[in-house]
Amino acid sequence: MSELLDAMRAFAAKLYSAPALRPTVGRIPSEQCIPPERVGTEILADQSYFSVVVNELFIAIGRQLWATYDPMVLVTIEYMYGGTKLAVPVVIGPGTIKRPGEQQIPHGIVINDIPVAGPHPYRGGPVTITMLLYKIKHTDYARGFLRFAENISKATGMPANIDTLEKVGSALLEGVDEILKMKDNEPIAGHMFTIDDSTRLGFRSGYGVLMSDSNAQISKMRVNDGRLEAQHGSEYLPYRDGDYVLYSISERSRRGEVKSLPFYSLYEQGLQAATANDDESWKRAKASLLSLYGQMVVCPDLISSEVETLTDQFTERLLAARKRRTGLEALRIGEKSRETVEREAIVRQMNSRVRLLDL
View (cartoon, helix red, strand yellow):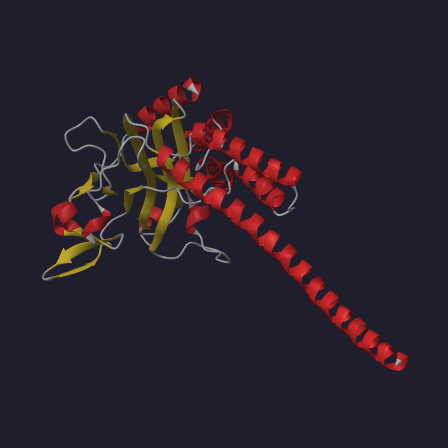
C-alpha cells in the first residue's frame, strides 16, 4: 500500500503543479445550505461513517473548449482503513457523463450524485481529498484509455481488501498517466485539501466547490438540496456561468448495506440451519452466529456500535426462524390430531351400532 500511496501523492503533485487556469475553490458556508441539517454534523472517530459524493458536475459542452475535448475528473480520497493508510482513486469521464443510447454528449450537461467513496468508518486522523478537472482531446486512443480508467475505478469505491486496491489503483493511475502524456490534454481546475478532527472545527459534513471561473463569488451562491445556485437580483438560479464540481462530505451513524461484506454468508448459513428444527442443526446455527460475531468485531468496514446492533438483529432473526419452523411443525402435528379425532369418532359410532345388533 505504501507504493500506491507514494504513486498517488506524486501523481497528484504533478497534476496540481501543471499550468492551469486559476480556479475558485472553497467550502459552502452552512448558512448558505438548504436544508441546514445536512451540513455541520461532526464526524466522530470510531462512531461515524463518512461518504464523499460528487453532487453536481457541470460541463459546458457547447463552448469551443469542448468542441474537440472530453472532460475527466480525477478524485482521490486518502484516509485510515483497517489500521493502514488507504488511497481510493476514482475517475469520472465520458462513460459516466454519456447517457445510455446517446451518440454524443449533449450541450451543457449536469451529472448528479456520483458516489466517490464510502460509507467508510472514520478512524480518526486526516482525510485528504484531491480533485482535478481535465480536458482530454478526442482521439480513439484517449477514449479507450479513459474508458479503461473509468471501469477500473468502479472497483475501488468499496475495497474488500487492501491488496486488491493496490493492484487496481496502480493500474488506474497508469491508465490516466498514459492519457495525460498525450499532447493537448490540459488541466482546467484542481485543488487538494486535508481535513483533520484535531482542528478547532473538527471533521464535519458539508459542501465544497471547484470552479473554473476565477471570478466566481461563493458568497453569492447557495446549495439548495444538493444543487448549486447563484444569486441573480432577488432570486437564486442554477449556476451555469462556468464549469464546476460540487461535492459533499456526509455523516451517518449506520452503514446500512452489509450483504456485500464477507461475513454475511455466515448469517445465511445460520439462518438456514435454524429452520431445520433439530438439535444438531440448531447447534450449527449457534456456531455460525458466534463466528459471525467474531468476524464483525474485526471487520474494518463496521463501527463497534453497528456490530452490536447487527448482532442483536441477526440473533432475533435466527430465533424467529426457529420459532416459526417449530410452529409449522406443531401445525402439521395438530392437523394429524384432528384427523385422528375424526377417525376415532367414526370408530366409536360403528362400535355403538355393533352393540345395538348384539341386543
